[in-house]
Structure formats: C-alpha cells, structure tokens
Figure 1 (tube, rainbow, N blue to C red):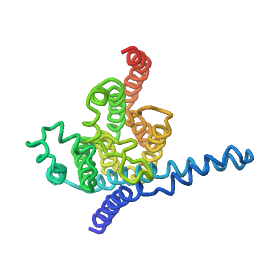
Figure 2: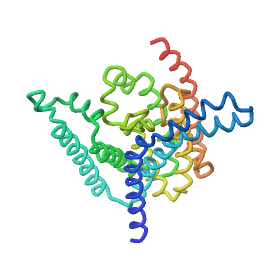
Figure 3: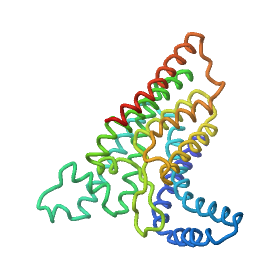
Figure 4: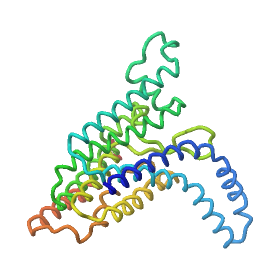
Length: 315
C-alpha cells in the first residue's frame, strides 16, 4: 500500500510539474534576454571566456526542454509502475479519453467559435482549435493524451511476459517509427495536415515568448512505447530507475538535437530502443536460437535502412 501511495504521489508530482512548466516557461522572458546578451558579448570576449559564455547560453536555451522531457517521461514512468489489471487500466484509458473530449468541447464553447461560424466545428476544425487555441484547458487535455497513450502501452505490456520479448518489441518499434516519421503516415499528416499532429502530440514551448508557442513535440506513440517498456521492466524485475535515466538521457539528447537545428525531425523510438538495450545489457537470457533470430532480424533492419533513406530522399 505504501508503494502504491508513493507511486501515486510521484505521478501527481510529475503532472503538477508539467503544469508548472507549461505556465512558467513561456513567461521566462529573462532567459532570451540573458542569452541575447551572452551572444552579443561572446565575439568580444577572450577565447576561453567566449567558450564559457557560449556554453552557458546553450545550457540556458536547452534547460526548459530538458525540464519538459524529464517530467513528461516521468509521467509515463510512474504511471507504468502501478500494478493494474487490464480492466483497471481500461477504465483509466476511458477516463483519459473523456478528459480529452471534455477539454476539447470546453475550448469550443470558450472560444465561441460556434457563434462566429453559426454551426459546430467539424473534426478537422476542432483539431485545429485544440492545437492553437490559447487556453489553460490545453494543459489537462495534453495530460490526458499522455495518460491515454500510456494506458494503451500498459495494456500491450501485459502480453510481454518474458524480458527477452523486450528486444524484438523495441526493435520493431524503432523500425516502424523510422518509417512512419520519414515516409509513412506521420510524414504524410505533417505535410498535409500538421494541425492534426499538433493536436494530439505533447508540445514543448519556446521560452520567454509570453504565451505558449510550441517549439517541438512528443507524439502519442512515444508515450505508448515508453509506458510499454517501463511497465514490462517493472513487472519483470528489471532496474526501473536505471531504465528511466537511460531513456531520459537518450531521448532528451535527441530532442535537443531537433531544438538546436541539428536534425529536422527525429524518430524518437530509435533512441528509446538503444536506451532500453543499453540499460538492460546482460539481463536478456536468450537461447542460441533466439540470439540467432534476433541478430538476423536486426541485421536485416539495419541493412535496409540505407535503402530506405535512399528511397525517402528520392520521393
């Protein structure tokens, strides 16, 4: 009972931290002011001092993203640590979906869009409103999206009854994520209807803009697979905190590479897979046949990546 209470408090703390960051990061106008001063001063400073100033500027710029990643991953992590039946998890999934729908309907009412349009908005128009309307209702809505995605991942994890199954799960997740982000459904939706992706993905804002302006985002599939992994790790007796820190480190570095413009987009589940394998190295007890099968599948996937990249670049 104490463990359940502790996990519940940690989850509540992670959600509260998410809300606090949502409200404070856009208002932190002092960060752009300081980084602007540092950027101005760096060319005139001695080399050693200039390097330090540049480093401090990068830290200040990236700190809000790191904080958002920490609490968002923590939400999936602590949620996955509950010992639930499929029925209990399904009830939470239904409640999360109801929360999302309720917040969306409240935003439609709050925005008075029905009065201006003379009708109720259709699904696409509602998604655009969900993605762009400046309302605090977006906070519980995105928290609901994270919990709903984590619930689906938790339900899938109930079928992972052997730690060896984590290897093929994360391998296929990484490969599918690569395809969906670069050329598959996610890529198509981003190109033709980006508001749909923005409406269902948890955003990370620009700092100091005065209002919540998304800078980058984490898709629901990322929360689904994080919760799947964390729940399986917890149930199978692997090191939960170690997995959290490996996943946090890998995915945060990936997100920072997008924030700083090093990469335009990033299939985050590739980093998740690498983090899970690294965190649990030596814990998988595969038979000889399982080792051979895993190596063959992994080799085929890796070998096909250059071909996939070539096709993507041509299309």
